Length: 83
Image (cartoon, rainbow, N blue to C red; front, side):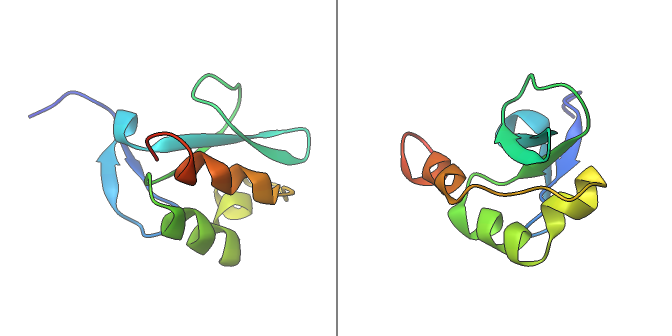
């Protein structure tokens, strides 16, 4: 069994090793993507549908325990590159 930390997707609820998910954190009052950002993190699978579901259900704000503004451009992470 792997020793990798397990995290839960804020969109679908699937548990997966941390390195398989994308991490977001609150920077000010805005949601930002980044594995090394300070503070509490929230994770999604590498699928756009999970990002959209977390956004619709206020999953990002709930997990981060603060209200965050979500820039629609963040969705490009899932469509550009290996997302």
